[in-house]
Image 1 (cartoon, rainbow over the protein chains, first blue to last red):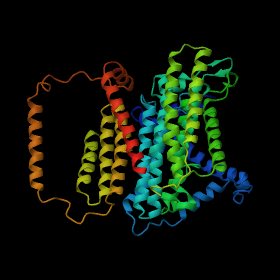
Image 2 (cartoon, one colour):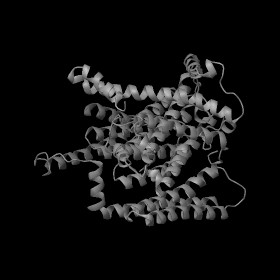
Image 3 (cartoon, rainbow over the protein chains, first blue to last red):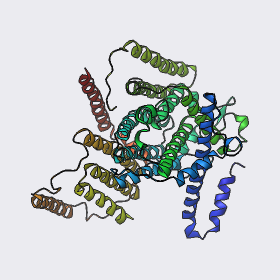
Length: 386
Length: 160
């Protein structure tokens, strides 16, 4: 049951003549990734609208199909048949390319995420580096969209988005560095394998260590900011700059932006699962009979649920709060966390390293919080970049 | 495959020089960077290829774009793109190329034959960085941290 998809793919590949087998194998992996995550995108849009509606005491979509279950289908048809408007002053080529530059890299990033046992599309020697390298193109796409639209609001949104993404990329990568230090490898498959095994029924996930827990929380916050989701959704704040960098997109191009944003969220959640939550490993030793891919997608859905919950609960940050949080809190915390991970590596196992590392991380958290709170001044604010 | 990537990279570089709109030039430069990264990957240097994409597409290109937007805007230039002294520039470029060409052909490294293909894995590069090249690495780290702190200090002074 665990290897059913792997066996099916091998059976399919065997049917082809030998020279075509590598090509076919690649094609099947690509089709599987696009199919699975695009349908997950459809389900997530519905879940998000339903979940947000539940938190705001309303029904959410309930007209199409039973309980509104066919709503994603109706949205898709609507996006496809809508007129594609391009502003007269827009730079047509760049305007057309921007959604593609967003969607292609986020799907590429999913290639290195292990979704199950033997179920990684490409096991690269430098998988984590590849993930961040292709992620770099999304910032460019945001700029292309904002600049080419020839609209003040979309340019402001793009400037906000790029500033935010660059600032939060630093703690994102620094919190991932701890796991790379602990495993000594950049390969996602090796990182998942390092979290195998159980002691006393509990898994060896990195999130269950002091530095791992701090790293996971930092990574998740930075990931929320990277995917421009609430409470970090300043780039597309509806009440401030209408919709940010994709105001001037309509129809299917808008749907592509939407898709890219959600797939990016899945990819970065997948990386969080790989780095901290044990990848496709079961949470308890008596649950290992459940197929590995079921665990991966259960964890992914749990993280998506967390993102929806946060979006329904927290108000949007202000620009100065956003930047202060990234540079004055997240960055020092991530650096202290790297120190804690290094100590964890060299102090012999036992209660000593638990106490030392926990004290280090908790002390940094409390200390930073106090210092920042006391130095907070309530004066006239100045704004830059809108 | 290498020829194709070379053509893409060169086309991007030429477009970056020849286009009128500065933002278009920056985007064409990104194409050249991407082509270069793909070229590294094609040659089996995974780590260098990914680092190229991360640093040049993710950071340098964004920096250039920001600089263009914050300084003179994205309006096209009124003058011609080619300056009047382009012939002199071409002459200098040809001279430099000739010198490099001559030095490369007369060097003793070439006739010695192809060296055995090195294995450039991420692990190998990391091992080398942490053992043989530890001093340059630390110096670079110190320099970059100093630059980071310096940038923050300049930014703070501006605000007051």
